[in-house]
Image 1 (tube, rainbow, N blue to C red):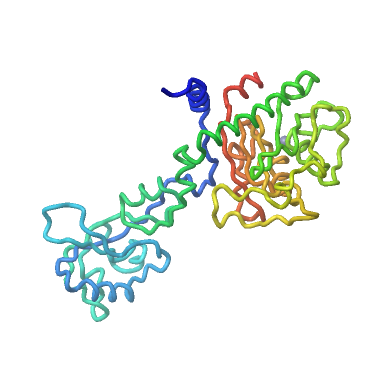
Image 2 (image 1 turned 135 degrees about the vertical axis):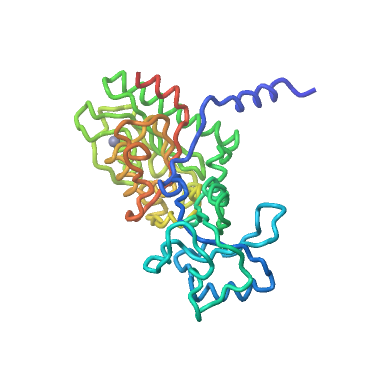
Length: 357
Ligand SMILES: [Zn+2]
């Protein structure tokens, strides 16, 4: 029989009440855009390669490298096995083709190509862009086959499978620390928002802070407090936190040997993660490779401060009406900024909503 303590432990870590979802860029979440096109069945399959060559000259589809020109026919009991994209509807602009019905002679101007081996053209919609996520790929493939370079981590994240129970248990303890800080801040008359910065490579807590905007400085949102505390730990820092004993940081000397240079790698590796943070005096540039746990979605100022300080990942619990990491903006995904980070929302959502009510 299984020892009682082991059983209890397994049950304890498998009963999370929260669900974590990635906050992806709009282009990764949007519906697949479609373009109108003409295709035709290939009746004589011996002509296939010849037809591909003819069409590559006549209608090259240069803007659609993700589209597979030929697909296998989906319907059974037809006289053909393959179908081929002839052209986009917009390729015919200016030529004398009536709306709707077209014939092969409309699509193959005399002398240039013959289209021998094709059956009657039909109307089809094809994906305008290469899919970025598996749900987009599945939707796009309903229309016409496309290429797709799957990012396994993004697929796992969308399906809520990126973090195992052990990792989720750790994440919960970090958010509990943020909630505790928020409560202590509230007792001092502050907004009930708390934040914790962690090095995910060593699970060391670097800084804990709560919102201090109702105190001496209106800019001291919980995230700003935390970033400043991390900077203090590296010998920098700007604000005076002496009045707030529950906002604290780990000092330079106290880090484990493992910590030095060993910081977290991006969770959802992609070309979006363009910046590499510098290592200064054996420590990362402010928040490089670090994770932030914050009870409420950060505002624009805080989200930009997280860009500047090179955070790796932000986990937040509840959305804010003026939130800049999913609600009003998605600053972490902005193409023209030189650092991007991953954002996940929903960690201990209910507990953090209670905190704000
Ligand atoms: Zn803020």
